[in-house]
Length: 151
Image 1: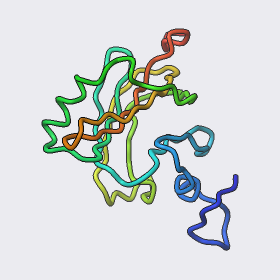
Image 2: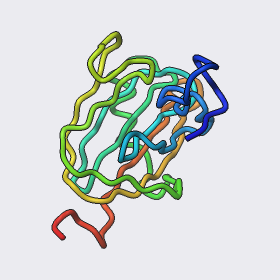
Image 3: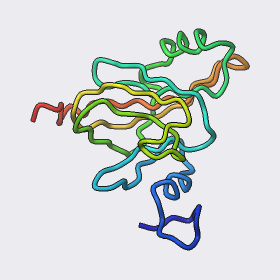
Image 4: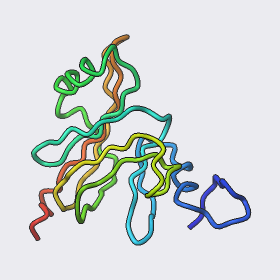
């Protein structure tokens, strides 16, 4: 597996190298036998909001306060999300959101651990803004109704 970015030019491409290549808000990269979800762009604070059919990964671009940003999530129109043409399979929980520069065992930055039911999830994305007050990048993981995790 190749990568444009190379932390060490004399070795094979690593998961970190492939993560650094991501330019979109979200992408999937090969990690071992599975896939890893990469949140592209600048490093932003994030949180997980569980929903009945999946959940939201919410990233703060700016906001007056954490509380104000969290209440803004309820104001995002349900049809505001755009299909990213990505789907992500979950076999078991919990999942962990961590900085790409860390290995699985070496924790440098805060991590978010969250539960999500097994199944295949459609990834929808939106950037929600309230002029001069709040800007959020939201990634909606929505359980694919064809594969609700019970098959």
